[in-house]
Amino acid sequence: MTHDEIRHWFQRFKYDPEYRDLALQRQVPMKTLCRYVGLDYTTLKRFLNDEFEPNAKTVAKILHAVECVRKGLRFKRIRPADFKGRGSSRWVVIGPFADKPVKIFPPHDSEDPAVRMVYGD
View 1 (spheres, rainbow, N blue to C red):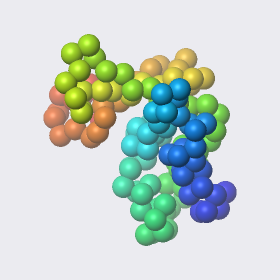
View 2: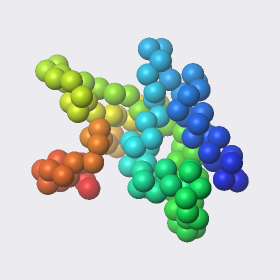
View 3: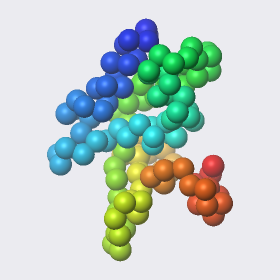
View 4: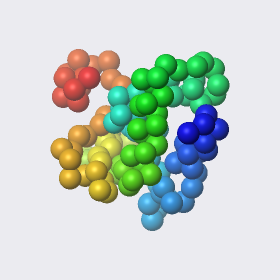
């Protein structure tokens, strides 16, 4: 897959209605997808913006991310009953990949060691 094709797929994940739920919420959040495949989000952004040439391992992770989403990987945002606004929600895996052990992702990288321990960082 060429660089332009990969960029096209990530644009689709962000804007195409096929990758949104009935409420038009994104089901493929980029940061969460990167965490799922073990890829640094900044690395993905730099690659998509043509800022550097990644090594073979990084390209393999990017292609793996694209392939997972093409095969049905989606995420759903869940909010606790005591939702207090931004930062209180979490993403869970849904779709055909949900039968694998479900991992709940924090909405962003946390500096709190307790959060990193719970989420396996």
